[in-house]
Length: 376
Ligand code: P1T
Image (tube, rainbow, N blue to C red):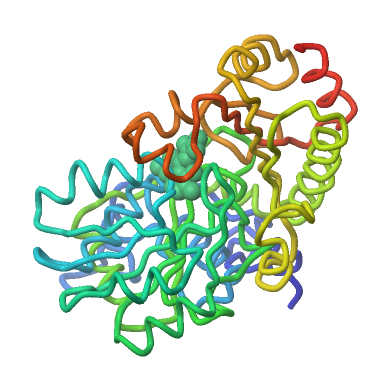
């Protein structure tokens, strides 16, 4: 089936009791057991929920994965993923990832004996040379938040297979509409469904997707054992949202291209970063491994004063954390999403105080351009 057909139908059948077209929100914490040891496959709300199962099947289909495992947030999914490892294991991570991922790894999980190396994974040689005896996983975010740096997923898969490691790709920025990491041999996909997948800024959630049965069994066990599951209502919201993922992503991209082009042509920003621009150093890789370029644009305004002028005076864009919703958001990564990353580390990969991140929504793009123009 095509992407939109799966998005609208996968994981969902009319309710057998009433014929209700839409999967109900199963608001229940437990299920009746007919007799000791005999039940309908549902025992307890943390362990199984039909609305959550529908969402897991739906997103698995969009990622061409055999399985989806849903969590209460992107970070809950990341935390569960790290439970595949044990004290002493070493992970190679893209040096620029979402600030919360950095904080979880560096300021929390190191206390439990996990070791992290922060590597510019856009250069595969760096990845190979970072492998040590106890390396178990390579975790990449591509494109990265907020620098929009790409990692060659096929190259990562080859390194992982040669060295018997686990590969993980955070696919939040592209969504399954523009990129399917499993196609390139990646083992496990991570999503903050809070972003494009839900797309309406009204629910927080996370998802892991894989076709590897061993990792799936373990992650399903961890989901229940550690319990970071999403509520049935949040699952229902996200399930409703994936039906329009394709049309939203097309519009996000159309607007982002026009917005980035305008920034470049007018010289409004000192540097404009968008994988769809020919000037992007990895534009060719973007064309190869993605089916589009997404809706995120970052721009360095050259000075904190100019950046502040834009951030504080926009009216259509909203100054807020998060991204991927239909409404446009603007953010200052250095003090907001990436405040946990030490300044020296951030600046190594270009995340300066004058960098502004735009999550280009699906409003009329002329209004978005006029909005930024009016601030300067
Ligand atoms: O916020 P949460 O659902 O827990 O997802 C964490 C997360 C994981 N991966 C990526 C690439 C992300 O961007 C995020 C969350 N990011 C933001 C809140 C933000 O404004 O960048």
